[in-house]
Amino acid sequence: MPATLSRAARTRIKICGLTREADVDAAVEAGADAIGFVLWAGSARHVTLARAAELARRLPPFVMPVGLFVNATQPEIDAACTAIPNLLLQFHGDETPAQCDAASTGRRPYMRAARMKPGFDLLDFAQSYPNAQAILLDAHVDGYGGGGKVFDWSLVPSGVPRPVVLSGGLSPANVIDGVLRVRPWAVDVSSGVEVGKGLKDPELMRRFCEAVREADARRADADRGE
Ligand SMILES: O=C(O)c1ccccc1NCC(=O)[C@H](O)[C@H](O)COP(=O)(O)O
Image 1 (spheres, helix red, strand yellow):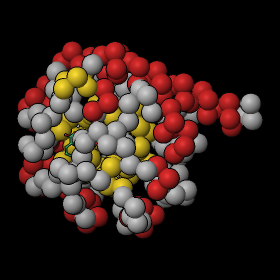
Image 2 (cartoon, helix red, strand yellow):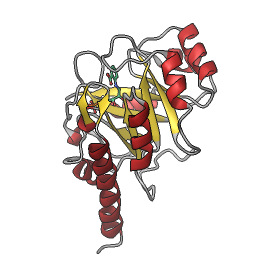
Image 3 (cartoon, helix red, strand yellow):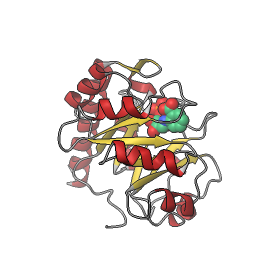
């Protein structure tokens, strides 16, 4: 895989923390490329594996389910991979590179979250997870993630050796700026499209995806020198 994919023609979109059928359908309709299910019981957006599998069965081709884990056990991860065969794993706890590789049984694709704060060496972090399909950049919040907080995007250096997913406090109001400044492979949102924890708003999801498409258009114009 090319190390950096920031020149992708289209910024991919993940919407995370879904718990309801109607929200899954609306997210797909809005244009999400990936739907995240929080499989960590410590989150207000938590869904059981059975519920996540039920929701994931609603996804059409080319829209992928993402399972979000925080320091899960191997049996928990194995059960999730069995229940949802095309599940992309997202490790959002304190998992080491070895734990991530072992948990993904060394072959299943996974994303590793990085909790960004001043002084955090993202280049070193990304290099220590060479098998991660992407590094998801989130704000450093209490409770591991889903905090609705924006981190300082100037903390993201150029040349990160893995595809980057920009996350943390994104919304329809700021995602254009985030895409143009960070030029990520993808963006990820949860709080910014909600009316309550785990309760997504179809109109906010539509506006978020529309804003990402606008950002891509502006990025293409800038790349053409227009
Ligand atoms: O969403 C949660 O409740 C959550 C809890 C614990 C760890 C991670 C969690 N979410 C992970 C995500 O991928 C979120 O989309 C990401 O943290 C951004 O959330 P937000 O800032 O609310 O958009």
